[in-house]
Image 1: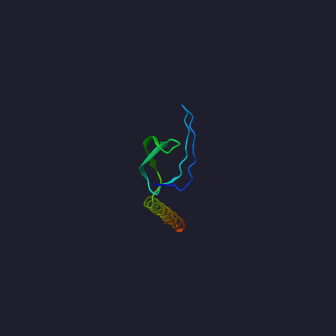
Image 2 (image 1 turned 180 degrees about the vertical axis):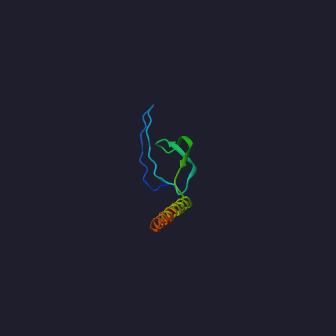
Image 3 (image 1 turned 90 degrees about the horizontal axis):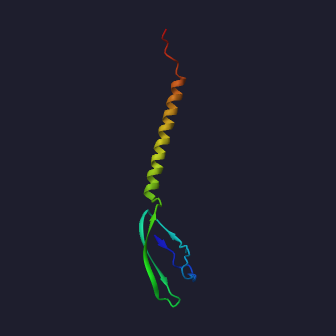
Length: 98
């Protein structure tokens, strides 16, 4: 997981007994659980409190996309073969049984 620290950090003032949400831009290249260390700093830059968060990514990797595309291709090929066989069977004259 890539966190983008190059973005300018905006100072957030949190009033006592209040909560705020802070959006963090990140990009996951694979699925899994990632540890994220976060810290709340005082205006002077000292650590007030820190926590470890776990972020779950459900992004599809290139292998999963390849397997899904391959399975879809096989399914479509099977449907096409079945339809062609059915069309050919409909054109054949019926064997006469009287």
